[in-house]
Length: 302
Image (cartoon, rainbow, N blue to C red):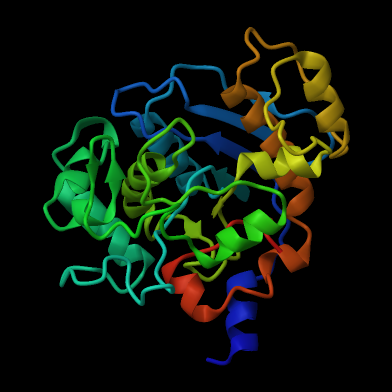
């Protein structure tokens, strides 16, 4: 399949089969049953404000929620705030030197799930403790001998994130408040469970019906709404409404709390509603078939 045909396959019929629902999920890799960082917001087509589905979520709850969307055939665009894969292109493998290193994203999800299957709450603690896997990660008090030092390894699309004034972290870095590796690993277990039920862009061709799941970076929505660099979190109603207005959304219903997770999810759902119809976001110039199979891509990075 040539590149043009591959791009058409991944794009599917977005122009002619628009989404009816837009869901943004702020994720968490915390190894507990109900992480405080989980938040889900839902918007319908139109200009109504996204609604926070306010409940004490577990990762299992969100998995069941997404399975229900698939079963109902809801044409939803679902944004998940995590990296669906590790860097691959820079070293020709996710885990160079490990004979179990997978060849593509779905293989990676299956490996993470298999090695962590006994971990409760869809955590992935066992994976990063595996004697071969741990060599590639920087963990608290344990920097693997194959972690390259500095900021670590990055995916190709993360260079695009930096070009948009964002600050990506290597998924192999599991240290610090801004690290995303733990979230990504737990998310990979969910992606494995959803495989074949929901189209996962760009690893799968876009389905003509039902939900589609994409990787999002919640700070990107804030940046595109006009939030200046250095400030990416919304913690009050007035700022949230100003940011929502930038995406043509009506003001939100008052929240019981204005924490980063709730406001990130609400604003990202409003942005997804606008971004879904932008054809160039489904066919970014840097997204090759090889990247679509291995590293994936952050939706919204042109």
